[in-house]
Length: 254
Ligand code: NAP
Image 1: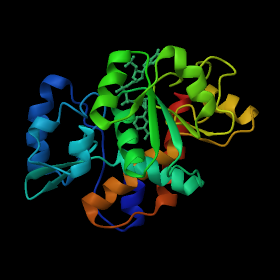
Image 2: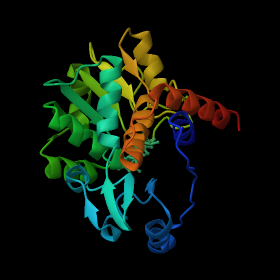
Image 3: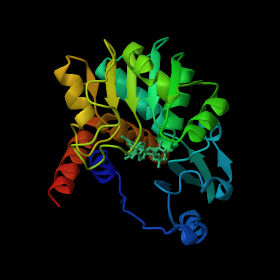
Image 4: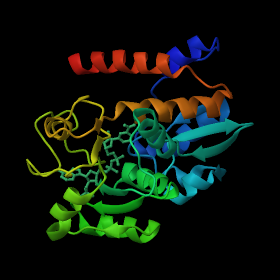
């Protein structure tokens, strides 16, 4: 996706995966500081990378997680493009969120970024998570409404926007984070999982006639925003979508 965007913009460069086991994170960042224009950071380093950075954007600081680093004259600056990337995906799909009731399933790194982004846009946010303490911590940090097990059904049915940020359904089209039949009465359903492109939760929502959105738009837009931070150039997002779809098609076959 990033290489297709570089090519389309007529820029030289390459983008590749740098497998980095946790004990090698510090050394890897020294290498980045020396040799790279920037990197994305993914599981499990999005939070643990913070102490090694020279500067953080206000969003990354508030979210407590970084997915993009810009290397500027050997200084490492951390950003979070998952948050605005999620919002761009909603905008593109015409799903409204301002002053709406959003229910987030999950309380991990992606949930934190999405909760922060939606809150900035004036949504009313509730969080439900399998591990209550993690949801409590997120709600306390960002001032969100905590949903406990007995209140989950009512919270789901009454929300305008349901967002699955758990990994339930990842590479597993049979699993859903909610019991069968439990869906918003009228709200839209977003699943940020992009593999498979149609999760079980989305299938059930579509059968019930609800608007749905998968994880590909967030993936592409967080990448497009990172590209712009690294290069100063707005990428061709259509090219990035095509490349991401092709890449995921390949991933699904292996
Ligand atoms: P994370 O920090 O590890 O959080 C995982 C979340 O899933 C936690 O809330 C965890 O609950 C929950 N969970 C895991 N297994 C569960 C189960 N069996 N039942 C119920 N809850 C379960 O991961 P993350 O970085 O937030 O990523 C979460 C998902 O979002 C992944 O599928 C990832 O691929 C996707 N993602 C997509 C994009 C995109 O661009 N589309 C970007 C980032 C992430 P506990 O707290 O109880 O463990």
